[in-house]
Length: 105
Ligand code: HEM
Image (cartoon, rainbow, N blue to C red; front, side, top):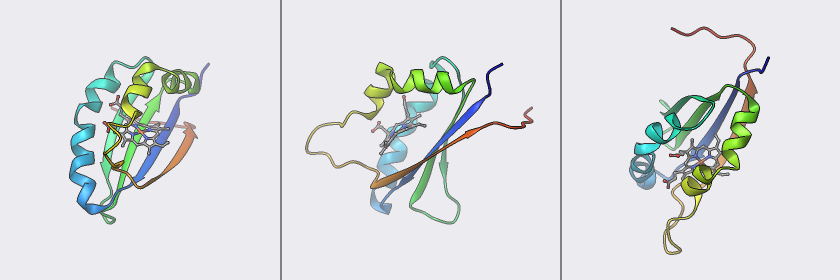
């Protein structure tokens, strides 16, 4: 049986770009609900640190995540939106986990 897989991408966002980034992610819940094997998508604001926003994704398996990384949908979401536009996130930090136990309603 496949283990579920969680990947979180922490984005470090200058405060003046936070609103823009939040806007860019406004359609991502719909987008991710179409992706095979993606059980959950959350876009999170850190309560204490204004410049941290986290993309949380939960997958039926690591393979489903890897398939998405190679998909046109991933490419489309991550291609730069024109050469003059600066990326909204300054840096990022990726963390991946296998799910050992879980409870959900
Ligand atoms: C490697 C550096 C990465 C950076 C700097 C980055 C940053 C971003 C940004 C700025 C967007 C919004 C795109 C837009 O402008 O509309 C985005 C979309 C997204 N990113 Fe990343 N990302 C990276 C890699 C990843 C990885 C490895 C994951 C895995 C969890 C991930 C998860 C997502 C998701 C779920 C979306 C929304 C996709 C959609 O709407 O279809 N990102 N990312």
